[in-house]
Length: 301
Image 1 (cartoon, rainbow, N blue to C red):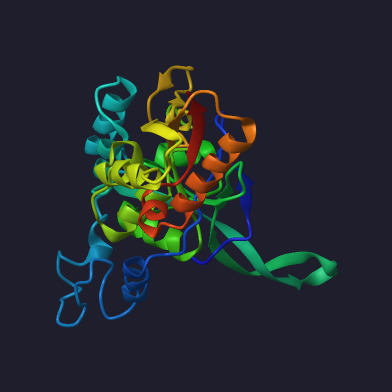
Image 2 (image 1 turned 30 degrees about the vertical axis):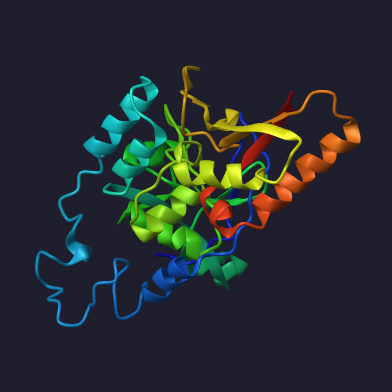
């Protein structure tokens, strides 16, 4: 993969990123990053003893690629837009798909020629990064060459499997993948799904994850002022097609909406203390922060 670019574009979405859960990389992802570019590939398979001239060479996987959209990925997107599948189906399809990462030429050295005319002497190829509304770093990737060329006519496509792109994004400190920005439908892969792609592991959104539900109940188990805790898809998972149709998935977040049902008649000070303790417990739980990218907490009685 090319090196980091200083060229950044600000990515603006209709749905701003709300409260995010910051988390240092888990050791299993750090281990995957150590393997990348080392003695093994990103799946952990050793390079030693492998015939890189044969058809199994990953460098040759895209020799006959026509640059079109992966049919399995497009099918999952179509089902999501139609309301017939969830975000996890799209991420699962993406995990098997070839994508294109855009790179651009970036001048690193200039030279003065005859008559003082400045010319390019040396240029590097560099990744393009996006900046999400909350300031987080995001890597744009494209399901086909046509989408990328419409978005940035000067960018050159580099074909990779999506997990490799995810691993590169994680290694550069990005927390989001933005699939097909500027196209008919843009799908945002949020941090937990990005980490799952990088590990080539399965992923369930936090609002459907039974482990997250257990952690939420544990966070209020000692709160006598809380009757119930309810988890739902956050309002920020929704996105829109270019035509304006609302899609129940693919948005940047907040991805998890948590309702705290409190005892009636509590004063404002008591309510604030309960909410603060609840957030602190969640923020200090490493399992929760790994599984949840962003959340919104609402109180009711």
